[in-house]
View (tube, rainbow, N blue to C red):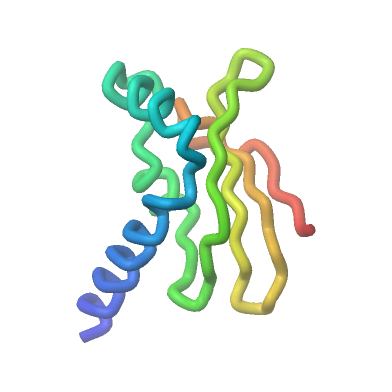
Length: 99
C-alpha cells in the first residue's frame, strides 16, 4: 500500500512538473536530454528525495558559468520555501537556500 502511494505521489509530481519548466526553456532542455548532455529531471528529483508532503513550486533551467543548472524550488513539510541548485549534468547539489 505504501509503495502504491509512493508511486502515485511520484506520478502526480511528474504530472505537475510538466508545466513547471518555462516554455522557452523546454526546447533547449529537450535537445540537451536527447544529446545526453544533462540528466533527466525525473532522476534529479528522485535524488532530492522530496517527501510526499513537500510541494514542488518551480523548476528553471539555466546555463551559468559553463554549467547546466536546474533551479528547483519547493515547499518543505515545515512550510519553508527552499531553492536548490543542481548541476544538470552530474546531479550534484551545488547550493541550497531557504527563502
